Image (cartoon, rainbow over all chains, first blue to last red; front, top):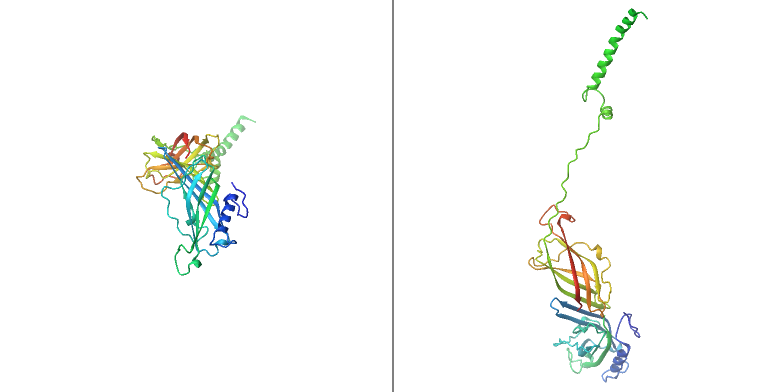
Length: 164
Length: 196
């Protein structure tokens, strides 16, 4: 199922209001110039589910986002930290022990994948909030690793991402 | 004609008849290679009748009973480039000896969810026998039953049924891959399987 998106490649992605919200936040973030914006696009989603003979259920929802936009030009690496995730039936999808978000140099790399718990079968959408960290080495040239000074954190909200 | 003339004519023709009779007798009793050419003899000789030897029909190996157990159902629901969508039910063949089973296939005849949607995959009837996935010889034999994905609004599978075919040559080195003697067929029926 495809959803119409402004300026996005074909395929389901973040709902338009979410994109607008995210872009606005990035533009207003003090460390970035107003013209430096980027967006997060989620056009690939995997919902793996299982039920055993004993009626035990398990599963995992994986959102596979990619970042795109001029605001990424000076960034060397990215990471996505999730603070909340729910489906539209109210199920909390945050893992009990969330893994530490790794730095990913590819704006569409596997390191940016968001791994969540299994949504309800009856759910149709999920909403995820968190922050995207951009490591911009030029802001702290003396350090070879990300520092508070060289990391730009941008809050995001992926609202109404439809489930497959 | 006077009786004397008739007598002399009869005497005169007797030697010719005798010679002709001798020639015919010789031809009739001639043995191969000493009389008529082979082709000519083949034309007059009776056709050989093939002897019908009854070919022993294949003796079907008795199919031992097999217990099957539902293990789990799993769905991979995907969108975009996240992989291939699938729904599979794993059925364990209780007591099935992995080392004896050369290949297997699952023929799904019926698969319907509680919304009435047909979940039989296209081409489900033409699935071929496939070797079992390699693994521990002592590990239980588990066969996946592939289906179409049910809608999220569906909650259960009303019925999934079909046949499981096992090719069990039993160590016969001469067994052809499709020898029906070694094909064991089992029917399976699953009802009201809750979806994950």
